Length: 91
Image (cartoon, rainbow, N blue to C red; front, side, top):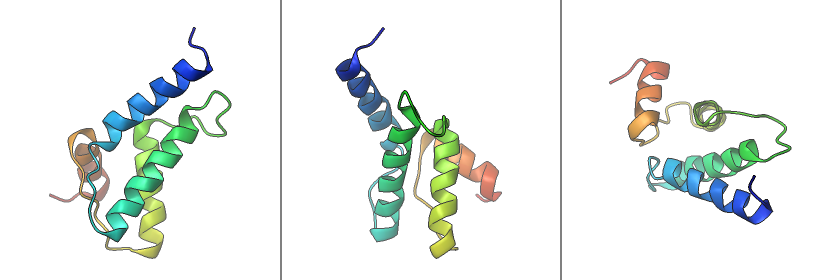
């Protein structure tokens, strides 16, 4: 079993790998990336209010950003690109 510090490091490592598939970009892209990092961190906590998968967090962030920027399409790669294609029916 991981202690608190090891668990935190493990969470950061997991999220760092995932967020590499969401590159930096313009203001909206960076906000999307920031939201993903924060929501994902919260979803991995031991006492998380919502135990969401990386895809659920991704779609929640996308939905939240699109409330303000309806035409936003994030620049993403890997598994997120596949999910975005499924979700948006584009590309």
